[in-house]
Image (cartoon, rainbow, N blue to C red; front, side, top):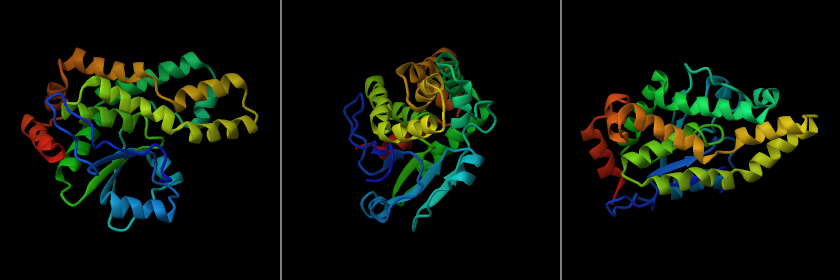
Length: 249
């Protein structure tokens, strides 16, 4: 399939032996310039009816999602009120690997604790719960940070263990390698120095410590993922049960 960083979360198992239903919950990078075969596969094979786009307004204006027949696209700007809206050009300008690492850590802090991000993830969970006509796909630009935490959140609420959640998260590094190589080569040809390219490479991949920081923030501030859902996301225990009933078998 010609869709970067795409995967079906179906087939993952929970701590109590249940399995996430296939073709119900999908994650990817942006739905931009998809070939006809990919569009048809999403609609006919994965029964896609809802796509949730976590990107910023400027990202959507530059590269709007393809309009797919029968697919409703909903934008939730997860980082709208945060101070972390660095573009690829910004990461080149930062030019230092340690500074990019700090920036990525601050993004994951905001994904967990920023009020707008929390409201966005509440809407995300409710949209999954309310979709009774087909599968839900969620994405951002690369499908790695906003999408990566979104996947970790819903998987944790489905009672998937942390090892599997981390494995899914790190799958991004393999699935995005070809696309990342193209981006880095473009900036190399534009004359970017190696230090800047190294800094950009950090921003294009994920590290386990980024997600581990997010999960630790949840535990430190709320005790566990279910309390976080109830207190920070206003997503009740009943809704968690409904989510599990909808997505597990």
